[in-house]
Image (cartoon, rainbow, N blue to C red; front, side, top):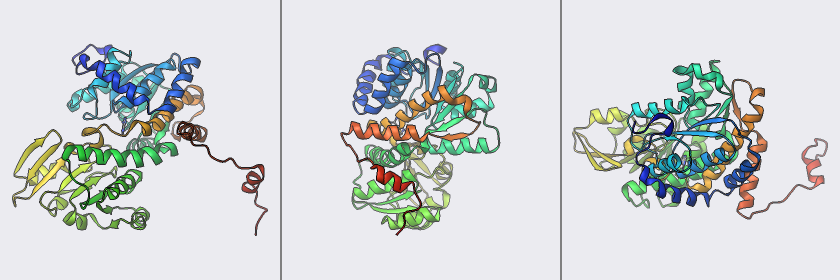
Length: 423
Ligand code: ADE
């Protein structure tokens, strides 16, 4: 590590000024979080609490960390992915805002886990995860620290799946709130955030024209829906592959072509995985792909594309640019892997826009406050975000957009809560 333990580990402190500008710019698009930050500053709901966060280190995350600090918490941050860290943001947080941050873009796996261990060594009371690496490390290598913890939050689908498996085995040692499950999170962040930022990442990496391309979207959860929607909006012909029949049907009725991965492999120009599962694009699929096919992942972990099979199949590998690796197969076909199979929206672009992270991180901040008040009443399980918090975030966002909606009349309320009025 380049700096001593409690002071964070960053690439270059001289990037801090640029980080400050970008963090402040992002906050202009985060009015809900800003409102919470102001309230937190006055009422100090997190006073005395230590929060360790393992999230993508971006300007939006910086504003979340600053909100938690405004509420009285001591905050420590590390990266939830080795390729997503914005080094200027890490520098600003660590040197200017008093939030020690352990994150350097493009670190190896060993340093990535050293950083996770460093934030856990601060003895947090609350963990904030994006992918469940803090919880997994605590439950395996750092069980001695579990006693300090009152609860945690989880940002993403993949993390929630991991945590539910842990809870199902009765091994989860503290309550977690699944921020991802809030409507004001996944309906917006996963759909419109991933939709826009995934196309942004692929465009920045390749500068391709989307119009007229055949784009294969693997997975039709909220993220896949957003990507397919936006790809079609750019003029692409969209194909969806799925394993869930209802979702496949939904994709078909949303107007996308639906087929198996092996059929899609023969015709796709661009492949994007967003399934949360492993080896979705595997050896047999590379064997069928057209010369020039582009392959990217926008799911949380870099397991969706079977990169080891691509390496084995290839005769040569060339680095075309920071985000493009060219694989040449024995039959001379060239396949292009973007961002080493890591989530392309953060590896080659800046992640979701601030306006959408506003809602996700407002949920995070309010859930930290909720844990400070209610954790003793929560059992050792993965809990949904309380509806009150979810609805508050939605209302505040609407207000910030100057939109005002109707209220039910007393008569309508009565109608909706009674069973006696029929035809
Ligand atoms: N996940 C996706 N986009 C993000 C962003 N901009 N900041 C933090 N986490 C993200």
